[in-house]
Figure 1: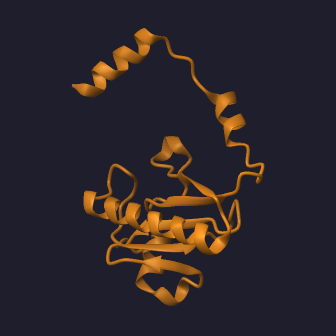
Figure 2: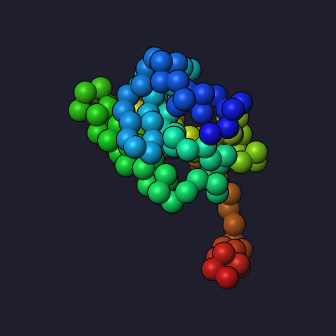
Length: 140
């Protein structure tokens, strides 16, 4: 754990996590204090990891399993019909808290969140040659 990390502090002193939702041996889920939607939940590994490239495979699996559990509970007990998962990783992604954390955004078909519109406005249009060149570089 890292002394100055806000999420590590929450994990060290569970009494500071007033809205915890679920936990496992390796991960903790709690409601976001500034949610995009009611039920917006964060899932963090209990061991400090700065971003996606720093988290262990075991902790990543634990985060995914806890996110799956929370999503099921949101659907069964929170009246949602879907969810989006978001993870900002690294300074180029707008990550602001440098302890890897997965956002679960509960959704309903009529919630007007507008992710499709957002995506279409920002979509890149690489050529097939650019896609192939990148795929080759990533396979090496």
